[in-house]
Image (cartoon, rainbow, N blue to C red; front, side):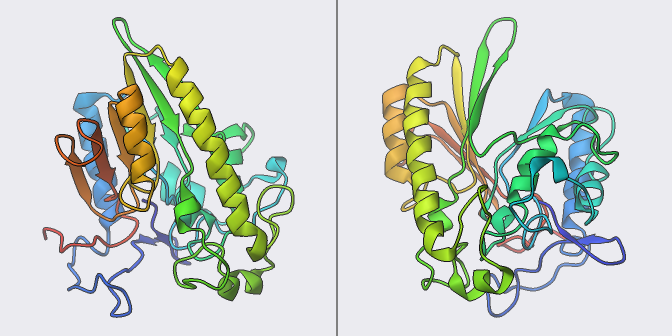
Length: 300
C-alpha cells in the first residue's frame, strides 16, 4: 500500500503499467499520480463516521523494495533514516478516527525486497517495539512474522491470526528472477545475507521460507483448535488461491469454521463467500492501497 518516496519528498505509486508488465494500460491523471493520497483521504473521511477500533494491514508497506535499509541490523538500531516511516506512513494516515489506532499487519513480498530478501523487512517488525523514535506515533503493530490477537467486545470476541505466507514467492535461486525473493540474479549484488535474522544466502532462502511456513501451519492448526472466540479471522499477504495455499486454507475453513480471510498482493479489490472451495468462509482481497498502480483502469 505504501508508495515510492521521491528525493524531493513526494510520494507516488510504483508504476506497474510498463509494457514489460502484464498490466499495461493508459495512465489516469488524478489517480495514478496520487493514488495513495486518495486512499488516505478516503480513509480519513470514513473514519470520522465509522470510528474504527484498528486497521488491518496486509503488507507491501513500501514500494518497490521495502524499507530502504539492509536486513540483519540489531532491533535497537531501528531508525527512519530513509524518511519512509514518517512520509509514507505516519504523515499519510492521520486525523480524527485514525490517530492513535493500531495498524495490525503482516509482511508482503515487497517488504523483503520484491525480487530479493535483503531489504529491511526486520526493521518493519522492530519499528513496533521502538519507543524512542521521534517519528513513531506508537500505532504500528507488526511484532513478528506471525502472531495472533483477540479483541473482546461486550457481547462477542474476534481472534485474528496474522501469517507470513511469502513462501509462495520464494523459489530456487535460478528460477523466475523477476518474481523471486530468493533470486540469485538480484540478491548477490547486495550481499545476500540477513545474518541471524533470516536467510543467509540465496541457496538458504527457499528452505528458510519453507521452514517458516511449516512452523506457521502447525502453530495455526493448534491456535485455531484452542480458539474460543466467536469469530476467527486470518490475515495474510497472498490470497488463498490455487498454488498460494488454497487447499490448506480450505481444510482449515472446513475444520474450524473460519469466518474471514483478509489478503492483499493483487492490486484490486474483491470479496467472495458463497462459492469456491473455501465457501462459506469470506475471502476479502484488499490490494488497492494506492502504493502501486491498479491492475484495472481506475475511475478518473
